[in-house]
Image (spheres, rainbow, N blue to C red):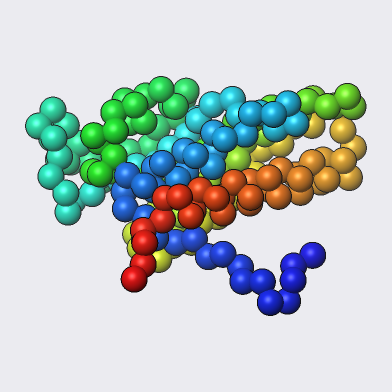
Length: 173
């Protein structure tokens, strides 16, 4: 139930600088560590070099000939997340993370995408954030239970998203 006077939070690509956008997506993806919804790993990321910035010397190769960098695997510990000096030079448009959920009645796994799809396809700076299930496997759970779990997860993510947005967004005058 949404209150009539409550404003829906619209989160856009251009509400962050490059480094803060990476921190924002990483924060909302990784901050779930309860049994009911437990972060496993970052498994898919789309980065774009920012042509308006100067790359550090050891990363000039990223600047040349690379328009888009799609990474799959266990990425949370990759150079692209660990090396914070890269962050001002990279525009992240998508992060997909995997999670597990455990309850008395079921074990489940899911993949959730945190993406600015209009940036990925059209390079739109006003692209809106879309959070969506990419996969959901609920062993031992009925369809109605799975829908209940998904709704609960989205509610949890929404709360984290609002807090992270306040923390990482650019301050407007």
